[in-house]
Length: 139
Image 1 (cartoon, rainbow, N blue to C red):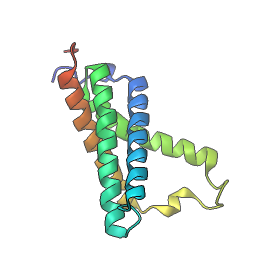
Image 2: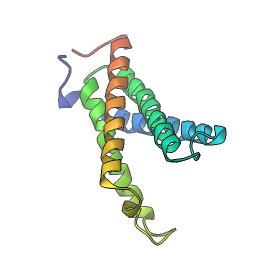
Image 3: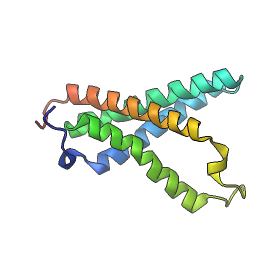
Image 4: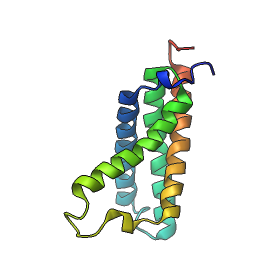
């Protein structure tokens, strides 16, 4: 692809796509919890959350790829890396205020790495699909 240049990464659309992905994933997790899939056990939780995150970030990536019409891989990877920015900001502002514990203690490194991998792959797939369907592309 000729459009994979850093100048084609639009941080505003990356952040907006991340928020769309987060919103869709959160909504799906809520629906899966209402149906009883999430909360039924460790396997149901893992599968349900993984599917919800993948679907959410594919949707957010599709929107980002469609609107930017350039650099789908870089925009998708940037969406996944934006998770670190959001996580740091949320922990900086709200960390320890409500529970007295750090949010970093509630998730293992392996779980965080797998979640980031699922987010990154789904965002790149979504960005690529949105890029393919965009009416005007930057080459």
